[in-house]
Length: 268
Image 1 (spheres, one colour):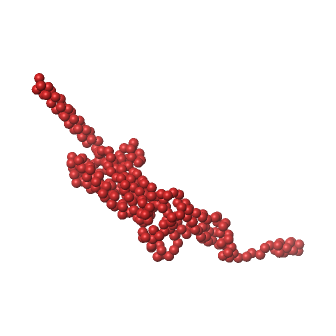
Image 2: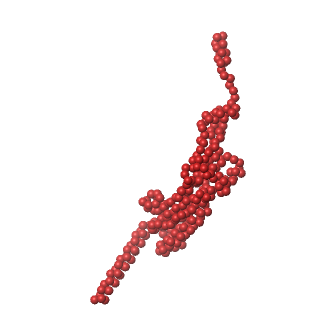
Image 3: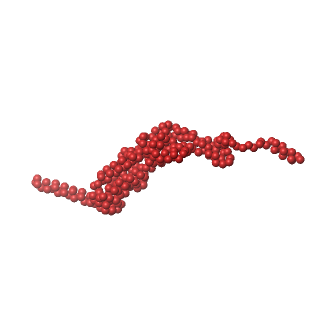
């Protein structure tokens, strides 16, 4: 009887359980941690775009247009990032905060790349030269340098074409690849003996194509050109060219000495 009374007393002291409603879930959402309230566009060389992550399919389809991205451009340097609580379990704190928008930043700062075969030159220590081939199947490389930037008014166009928003990635992949394509097309027209005198034609063709192509994608190419000489895949070719040049120089010097001797004899 005593134990039964104690049990009854304990039951009397217990608080009655109640069901959690929507208000409780919202209030206890804080148990999942505070949502971040802001993200920064850190400097004046960056352009921010506040992209909605939720919406109807019509809005998502519009993301594929340059005009829509222009509408999402933000001028403020501190941008409010809104979140909502996603309930994912029976318990009030079983869930997580989900961002309803995403801030994408496009860095418009100038980027310079130098692609060379030498480890001591170029942007990196790797062999990044532009390798091409003459019409008589002689492989060689040429060094190229390129500088580009994104104008502020072209940031939306750039983001439309390149959703990653990284000019550095574009330079390392598409710009370099297109330079190689154009240079290879010109080189394939001529045999090596003729091609050595066609470097200016290659440089002009690359500059024209790269400048016009990437301007349509929001990228301004400020400088592009070749530097250094040709590096041949077969080192013996370079040795043969060097020996030929040396022989020509020696022959020229010999003619000069003979000419001076004849002049002296004539005077005497």
